[in-house]
Amino acid sequence: MADNETQLAVIGAGPGGYSAAFMAADMGMAVTLIDPAENPGGVCLYHGCIPSKALLHVARLINETAEAEAWGLTFGKPKIDVERLRQWKSDVVGSLTGGLGRLVGQRKIDYIRATASFSDPQTLILKNADGKTRTLAFKHAILASGSKAVDLPLFPADEDRIWNSSNALALESVPKTLLVVGGGYIGLELGSVYAALGSEVTVVEMLPQLLTGADRDLVRFLVKPLKQRFKEILLNTTVDTVNVQKNGVKVTFKGGDDPPAGRLFQRVLVATGRRPRTDGLGLENTGVTVEESGFVKIDERCRTTAYSIFAIGDVAGQPMLAHKASYEARIAVEAIAGRDVVADAAGIPAVVFTDPEVAWVGLTETMAKEMGRKVEVARFPWAASGRAVTLGRSDGITKLLIDPDSERLLGVGIVGPGAGELIAEATLALEMGANATDLALTVHPHPTLSETLKEAADSFHGLATHYYRPVRKKK
Image (cartoon, rainbow, N blue to C red; front, side, top):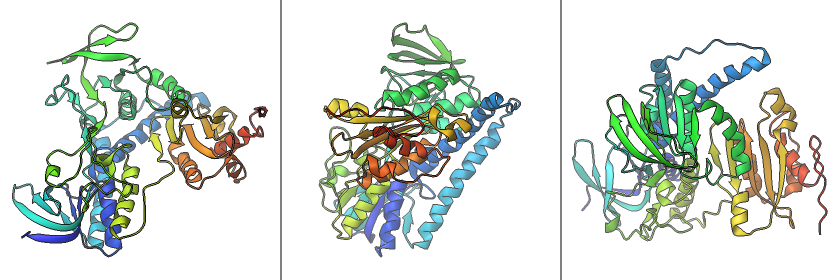
């Protein structure tokens, strides 16, 4: 017999886990939320989304003070107090995680600081920091164990000169030279932070473009400023050897048109992706299927192959994004409550919080080409946006992918400051099944960057006020 029992056990208190626990409690379920941390938040709040965005805000401000010289405003070189900056970042994290802790109490959720593993499909073994264990029986469980950084054998993980994203966000120091391995969103975001703080940043990417998966016409607006802020961007290039020395990390490269000779870096940030966290969970005792990709297999209701267990978020498949986890949390809880629901979001937006930001949702042009799907692409350049010009930020574009027959909106891509905010309107438009006319006839406030969505839709019909694009004659 188990030491305790609960109606719903949630394993992992990241954005997916605590969202599931909160919603279930609001619906009247008895909930136990299990996580080793003092308060809910998970990697996102403690070591990911939130601290990185706090530091990216600082980087953006530093960059803007430099750009303001073109407008007649000259600021002195910023004096950066790393200790105070680190404390401010920690205060942001503490405020948000502490707030979640209070919400746990208000909802009367049983929060247990422990690690969890399954002994069978309806029992958990909980181990606290002291190594003491107890058992918890449950009617249903939601697995929200998240993901962890990919460790590469080439890079010794126990060396303090070799960083993962969590090490980089700790902001213990600002190295004079930093090598970022991986040109995805994590590498570019953290590289941008350290470049703004004064590091000479080199990015190495094995593929021919940064942000693989994003459309090239969006990425090119980001590459130009990054080439100015970073010391170097090495594409089609991989790290060949890594040698940790007293004075830094000696790295050699291979591939590319002209691979550079060996170089010495004070720190190396390995940002080559994340993998689902399934180790040590006892899933072999449950009947839960773990696929070759490492993700837990789920159905359209987020239920695993063990009827009593659901899985959400990073552990349950791509995209590995916090808002996808929160969405799946709702689906899983409503399914447990007996409601007829399925996960069928029309689009899950992706945002890269660099400067400029890059965001997209739904079908991309790259995906359409791979699928052989015929689409009409309508673009509106931000150089024609009054608001963008007043901000001194005409380096952007809004593009729509539209079905040429029904005119239904299939996907949206945006690059420019605030793209992450603007993509929400596009996501709603996709969810509501809007077409180009719907978007064009929606009155947008002037002058705002949101008008670029309307003008892109107008452009599809050849009617954009501030951008001339002749109407294409239909065959």
